[in-house]
Image (cartoon, rainbow, N blue to C red; front, side, top):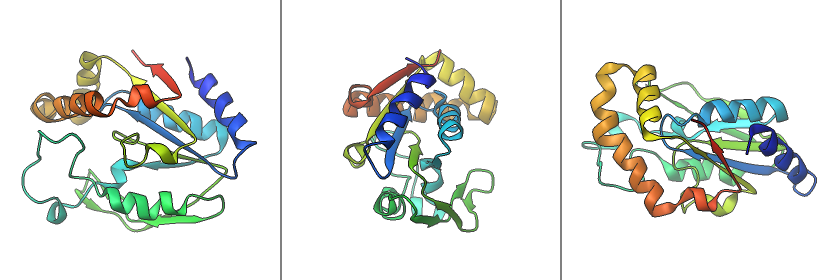
Length: 190
């Protein structure tokens, strides 16, 4: 299956819904952000990254809990309140995105919700949100490629975090929530 298939499927849904919510999920380094941007550009869609809802250091509390299935470091309730609760065409979504570069919040941003609203990120198809989408995409790629991409993007100094925290947590999420089974489309990005 391809990007073209996703675009075609979503275009068909726009004829049946006032606003089509699209969830794009995949493990870290799978290419979901790139795919989401391609689809958003093709459909003139609103694109929101779940990474923007990472908690600030003062709200994360303690060390990263690698044994959790869904990361406790994201503010899922804020994503629900700010995005899903306002997900209708023409509404405005306003929030302060988290920045990994400064490890804190940026000034408020606003998105006007267009005919298609894409929410992209690891855990996008978790139990809390999965039933709210009209279209769901799982981006699949091998763990070796994900590790290679992640270290290339984040730096060699992050290899240990990828190997001991993020890859195992992504695996637990995949095995527990089976986002691939919930997806309307699986895109293999090897």
